[in-house]
Amino acid sequence: MLIFTDKISLHQAVLDHKKNGATIGFVPTMGALHDGHLSLVNTALKENSIVVVSIFVNPTQFNSYSDLENYPRTPEKDLPLLKALGDKVWVFLPTVKDIYENQITSTSYSFDGLENQMEGKFRDGHFNGVGTVVSKLFEITVPDTAYFGEKDFQQLQIIRKLVEKEKIGTEIKSCPIHREPNGLAMSSRNQRLTDEEKENAAIIYQTLLWAQENFQNKSISELQDFVTERFLQEPTIELEYFEIADEQTLETITQKDIDKKYRAFIAVFIRDIRLIDNIALN
Ligand code: AMP
Image 1 (spheres, rainbow, N blue to C red):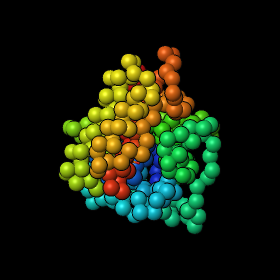
Image 2: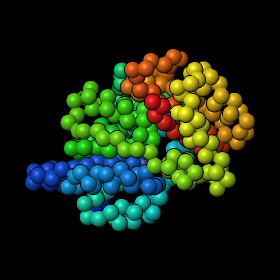
Image 3: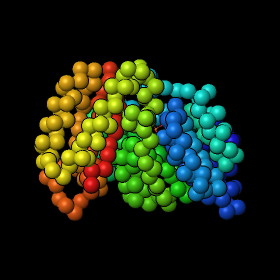
């Protein structure tokens, strides 16, 4: 494993290796690594000569100061996990100043409406922040392929749109959601949950599985009513949204069209800890 803390030396090293025929895989993360992140890195390692993993808690994608402050930062645990994956892994640990210089602001993007659905409605400016940091990181790391998790499915579709619109020559690959044994989607934010909260949070995936099983025989409003009702009976978990949306446009639907692919998307709060998840329905 190599560690880079400044963008110029990383950029130069990437260009030198690409000149010699190396392919670069890139896995952007905000650290507090878990098996979900590591699955992305392992997939990237199978397909590239070098895999750059960035660990950077991006301030511009947080719409709540306390969420940014409380986001887990555990470099002392992250680095040994990446080291164990071998010499082909290069870790990029930039500072905020390195990425944003003196202007911690986002570019304003249009992602053809993808940004206005679900997370976009509830996290003002979030996808402008994501687009801004991913563009900057792509410029530095010049990846042949970048790997994103389906856990953040809306983000994945936004990055595909970003690459298409900005004509960025990086292929975007998606990786399946990694889950805890009880079905809870792995997330850095899970570290802030107590054991009891983690156990209770299994209801998130159980609800998604229920929606998947009942997608064909119930209407969209029946599915939504059931889910709303189920969470009203859970005093410790607050449902922010449960939506069924077209996989491509992410537009939420009220009626099914048999030719289209749909997913259920959910966001909940446990105390101030926000968790999201999603599942393919057909
Ligand atoms: P984050 O550090 O949360 O910004 O996530 C970095 C990358 O890891 C993103 O592409 C996420 O979608 C992906 N990721 C996070 N959690 C999971 C998971 N449970 N399974 C698969 N990928 C994940």
